[in-house]
Every structure is written in C-alpha cells, then in structure tokens.
Length: 294
Image (cartoon, rainbow, N blue to C red; front, side, top):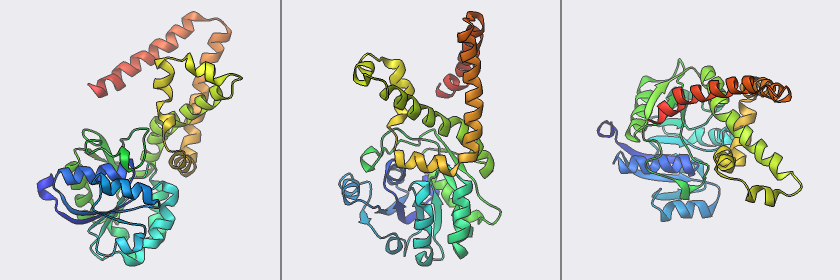
C-alpha cells in the first residue's frame, strides 16, 4: 500500500515507542517525505533526531502542525485534551488527524469537544502492538508487522481520511480492522488493560514482602514472563485505567471470580478441580494464543 500513499509532512506528537515506530515504518516504506516530532523533553527529542526517527524536533505542537498532511497523536490518553485544544486552531483544512490511544470512547469524546470543524478528518485508531520499553530509543521500524490496528471511525468521519490512515498503517505492515468504539474498549479492557493491572499488582505484592531482594533473586522464568509488562510506562497505564475504568472494573470482577474458584479448590485440596481449571486454561491458550503466533 506504500505506493498509494505519499505523505508530505507527518507530525508525530509523542515520539515514544508507538509514535517513533510509526515514523520509522513509514520512512522505510518511502511513504513520507518529512517527519516532525513533538515532545516535552529535550533529551528524548535529541534521541529521536540522532536515531533519524524524525527529521525535525519541536516542543510546540501548535507551530508544528501548521502545514501538516497527517498528524499522529501518540501521547498518553490523559494528555489528549490539552494536545487537541492546542493544535485545533492551527491545523490546515486538509490535514488528517489520527491517534494511537489504547482507549477510544474517551478520545472520541475529546475530539468532539476540541477539534471543531476538523472532526470529520479525525480517525480514531489503536495499534495493538508494543513492548514494555518506552521513548524514542525503543522505536522499531518493524513493530507493527503482522499486528492488528483497530480503526473506530464515526458516522461523520470522512471516507478519504479513513482511507489515508488505513493506507498509512498498511504501509507499516499492519492488518487494519474496524470496530465499534465501545466494543474496542470492552475487549481491550479484558485482553490488554487487565493483564497490565495484574502484572503491576503482582510485582507490588512481592516487593512488599519482608525480603524482596532475596525473593526476586530466587525467581525464574515464570515470574519474568508473567510480569514483563510491569516494565511499561506508569503514566500511560494510569491514564488508560482511568479512561477505561468501567470496562476495566467489569473485567477485574470477572477475573476475581475466576481467582475465587481457584482459591476455593486449593482450600479444599481438590486436585481434580484444579486439574480441570488448569487444563481448560491450557487448552484455551493453545487454541487461541499459540495458534495466533504460528
């Protein structure tokens, strides 16, 4: 799809893992002429320039978007109101705006509030990809290859804007799917937001033990595999949990119910019930998760 896409100026607001990887992937596909990165910290922007993730750096989003063709909002979702209100008066009429937020209903509400006449050219999106690392130094040109990117356009979203964003993600090697925003938030609460909450809680529980250094020193791959994502950005995940709290609380309740079943079986020393629960989980993992990787 890269041949169908020619972006003159891409502005990436938030040059971290996702925003930086988007820029690198489009550069690799020769789908963009110039990338301007916007961020809050000079050090991260300097890294982005040194690594050629971006071509220019700015700390002023309003100035950066003045002649933009495509704008990617790749900040934590809690920063979206401030960013959208800052750029809206300065966006050119033709500019397409999209985001990479892990929640969609709140971002769409923010766009309705702040983008005004630019709303039809805003395409809500979520690349379902990432690592536990952050910052421009974590950016990877191949991060989105074979990964899903979910678009949640609204009734008033212009078809041409959706096409441009779809082609941009396809140029990055992603599979693009469309989904209702509410369905997106419910699904991601269960399969992404809940696992992060569990990982953070498990590390905090272990770190609160009397001798955490000794405890962690004796751990093996099981713990590392389980809590890898606890290395993710606390700021980003705090914003996600608050933004999607209703769906996340529902997922947490379901998880607590499942834990209670397991706890009850352990209390009864019911090995048969534990085998049944564990076998059901293993079968589901092999059917859906292992199959997905193959």
